[in-house]
Length: 552
Image (tube, rainbow, N blue to C red; front, side):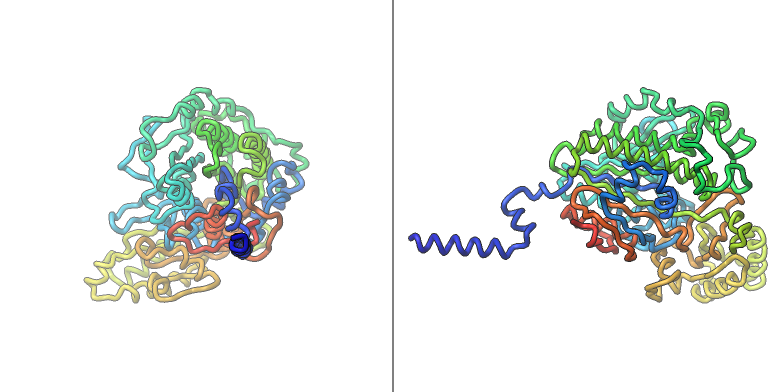
């Protein structure tokens, strides 16, 4: 009998020793113990990678530096598709795939089935919650796949909470996924409140109503002055220059910006979006959500998705090289430190996971680049349109073959083409060849090329990843590097070039190793990396891969 017991014990020991360490631990204890209590996903709208390094010496120890020094940094992280805009960016971060799969091909796009331009988060089937305006008529229904937040809800049988928030509606709705407990966004104008949609709820919870009643937004109605001595902001250009836009009511785009004095000229609370105070207000609301929703208070993982939108508004108005953008990032660094300190206290140091990335980068103001003798410029849209109309009239007569032009894409009327006994691919090719000869256009691709070919590198690869067969156009344009459609002040984005694709990717907290990599990673790798760490299913459209070096 003793011999039998000895053999059984030996067999048990041998079997256990052959198991992977994590499996042996899971057999012995609670598998939830290795998971963070809370995942915080942070998207900093329009954050170029070099904002991390350019302003490094000005950052404190508790924000960006804490995440870099105590976590893992992907230094060569890129979007692998275009257009690089907010709606597709947030969706790709959370779905682990590109517009070719998830369907969010722009902030707005021409919908072939309805013949109308649609917005990536709009939904007339739902009503606003927290406002009498239409600002809450939103849902994620245009997104055709699941998100990492959806998969967490499915895995936990909805016991894990998902809360998403941003100044922009699309910055909250799309990361929250189809199953979020709630998504909230900021309604400016005369209200200055956080609102939602009946897609999620019929009434705002008490903690949101209390936050709105506290006049939390009102305290930021103040003068925006530099956080530090502006003379120390040597990493950015002159404060007064011709490359920046001004707030309504200002005579020059310079510090200080007297928000109370120009409040009415800029639609009241809307002006906060274009200042670093919008990020501070977002942080205030995120901390209220942590408390109000009880996030991270049990072993079942919750998810808080935060998008800091003000960085995009400031970048568009003042540009990549402005004092304002530098000050905005120094203040955001303080907000990140404030957030991390509360997470330490509420969730516990080492019990939560944070990742930080961006939805796209931005180009230096082309006018500034041009003055520095760097090739750059602005597309002559009127001249292009007139020349193109002349070509179409000469080639196809009075036939109206063009249904829509948007997002640098031409949408053709296939029925008219068929009635003229023409082939769609031949019309696409003819139009493409014509447009390729226009100033400011670098490349032209056709829908036929996107469907027939499998590109694996370069600009065609990036364009193809942004091409959705059901939703995208027939002819797709790529402008020359640093050539844009926008007015001559402020920065913009949307291209397949590195200034728009290269963004930060930081991981920090439970389950994350310390270090960095210069190997290329892509934005679609984030969701499967988080899924692997949590031990849950990948979002169902995932095309990215887990970043092995990140995981402890």
